Image (cartoon, rainbow, N blue to C red):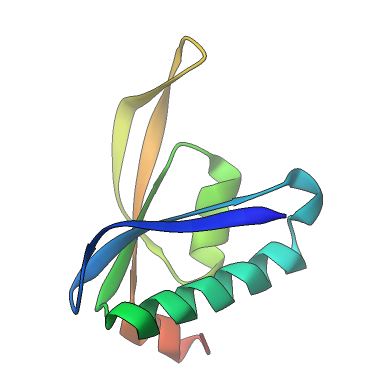
Length: 102
């Protein structure tokens, strides 16, 4: 069980994407779900690149498995339950995703 979403979509240019998976669904299932969702998103919008922002290490690791590259970090950008967290800013190009078999 999970959810994939897109936001700030600029057709033929870029979009921001997010993916949440229940802990029990992580692993091979989340990798396949992410691959399918990213392929659909690239195809649907003709995007050149997709961006992801996350304060969560497991989410950033999944992004890297999908071919995203860390472009920046935003120290103390996220406030979660009274504590600040650094946010990773990651980018996936359509070309890199295709090279990885996406």
